[in-house]
Structure formats: C-alpha cells, structure tokens
Length: 131
Image 1: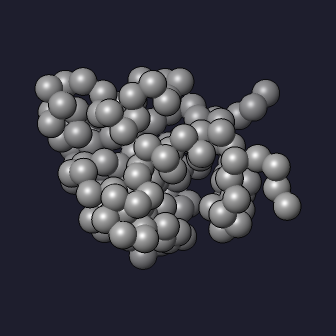
Image 2: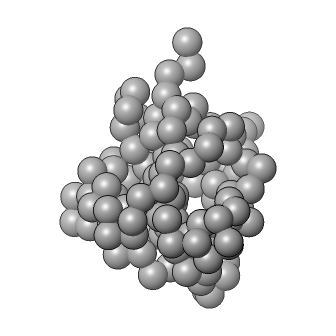
Image 3: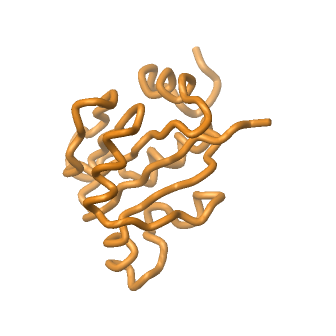
C-alpha cells in the first residue's frame, strides 16, 4: 500500500504518467469534460470532495510549473485568488476566459471531477520537472 497522501489508483497513475508541460484539470461538478482526456470522477455528493481537498493531495504528488484559472473565478472574489486554491499553489495562476479554459481542458491528459459546487472552481495544472 502507498505511504503517500494520494491513494486513488487512477489519479496516481495519471500524475505518474505526466511529462513536462502536460496538463491535468481539477474541476467542479459542473465543468464539462471533453471527450479526449481521461475522466476521473471523484464526485460523491454536492460538496464532496471539494476542489481544495483534491488540489492539496494532487500538489503533494505533482511538480507544477504553471496553473490556469478562469478569469470569472477571480472576478467573483473581487480579483483575489479563490479560497479553494489560496495558499496551496507555489505559482501565481494565469487567468483566461471561461470559454478559453474549457478549450484548454480539451488538451489535458486528465480531468478530475469533484463534488465542488462553487462556480468556476476549476484549475489547470501544468506539469513541471523535478530536476
């Protein structure tokens, strides 16, 4: 059995397979998942699990070079970083329109669906290198 925080086999496998510049998306319950990426559905019920919880565990396993959020998520918080990612990222996220965010999601290796019901609670994580 693994000793690290991430126990979900499919998500662990997806992160292990990432190369430099590959993307993984952590999304709310309403984010449309495109046909291309692997769909990892963790949603159990509204609010469970939260994006913040999944993000924390994913960041414990993944080297992140860049992050992208929808501008609408920043606008909803008066321009501040959303509470669901505040203090977790080692990089300042880039902001794009929600439409561009959805297009970017189609290029991801995997999209993780959570039970989060906060509008625009979605983030693209771009894999970095550990050396």
